[in-house]
Each structure stands twice: as structure tokens, then as C-alpha cells.
Image 1: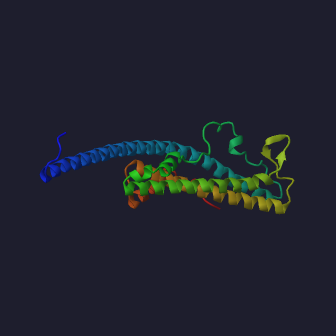
Image 2 (image 1 turned 90 degrees about the horizontal axis):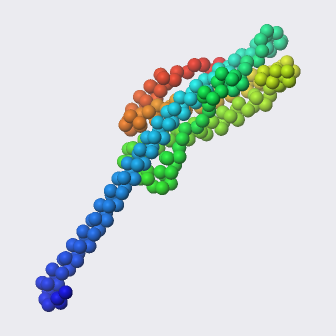
Image 3 (image 1 turned 90 degrees about the vertical axis):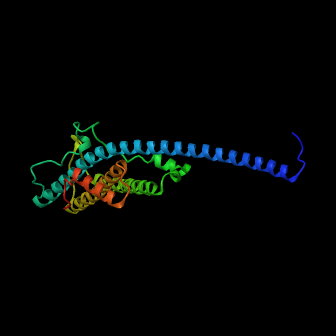
Length: 244
């Protein structure tokens, strides 16, 4: 390359260098932007897939919880009748749903999936989403976290009455309360009631999550869209049992 002999040539040379640097930076930023767009699109597709799976999870969970809630009410009603009739109910302690072979393998208690969202927060992918979309997903998954937390509470609440039951050795799938005192029967009734209220609250969280999840899947990101989604969800999964 010939040497620079005057200021004009020097300035032209520097302009070419600067232009080359700017083009290189622009190309690098363009490549990075395209990469981010690809990452965002892939992340959104994964979130959608997780959301669709969670729809099926909730549908199975609500069916399972309705069986549990029905059993808890039947069990509480049995214990209350047993106390009032002084053991002359003429029937047996109701059979628990998981003891019924007709329900095995059909439904179950499973938490909504959160792996994609959690990975997205940890890796910074959430920051690639538009702000309103990221906030909407955050609201949905916060509700999923509440449901999961309530699940632990529900299991603890249900363990209390189960621990109080007396197993009939001749009929292991049934429960025999004839060996309980009146005070124990009263406490069992209260424990069954507390378990019902805990599962009922968890069911409500699930239905609300289903509504918000459906709203996001349909492209609704506003509070009004979420409210409509929740209302539709409660119409699809109406309460089958009223608290006592």
C-alpha cells in the first residue's frame, strides 16, 4: 500500500477504516439480533408446548381432585352420622378413590410443569420476550407455583385424618371407626373437613391457572383477558361440592 502523503489522503484512509469497523460492528449486531430472534421464537414455542401439556395436566388433576373432595365429604358425613346414631349407621366407611380399581391409571394428582419457564429465567431468555408477554407468563407461572405450594399443604392436611383411621384387618380396603371414642370421632370429622377445604383451595388455584394458561395460549396478555379466561375456566370446571 502506498504511503499517506498528505492530510487528505490520511482522512480518506481513516474514513475507510472507520467505515469498515462500523460495517463489521453492524454485521455482528445483525447476526446477534437474528440469533436472539431465533432464541426467542424457540423459547416461545417451548412455552406454548409446556402450556398445552399443562392443559392436560389440569384436566386430569381436576377430575382426580373431584373424586378426592367427594370422598372427603362422604367420609365426614359417615363419621358425623356414626356419632349421631351411636354406631348404628347401617353402612360402611366410604371407599377411598385410589382403592377403587375403576379409577386406577385414569387420573392422578400431578403439578403443572414449570421447567421451560424456570430455565428461561435462569438463562436470560425471558428478557428476550416483549415486556407485556413476559409479565403475562410471569403471572401464569406464579399461580402455578401457588398451586404447587398448596399441594404440599393439601397432602399434609389429608395425612392427618388418614393417620387417625383404624384399619379393619378382615377388609383392608375399608376403614373401621368402631374402636374410636366420641372425642376421636369428632376430631376425625374436623380433620376431614380441614382436608376438604385444603383440596378445595388447591382445585381453585388449578382452575385459575387453567384459565390464565388458556388466555396466554390464545394470545391474551391483558388483565381483562385473564379475567375472561378464568371465568371461562370456572364454567368448564364448576364446583361439584359445596363446603359444609
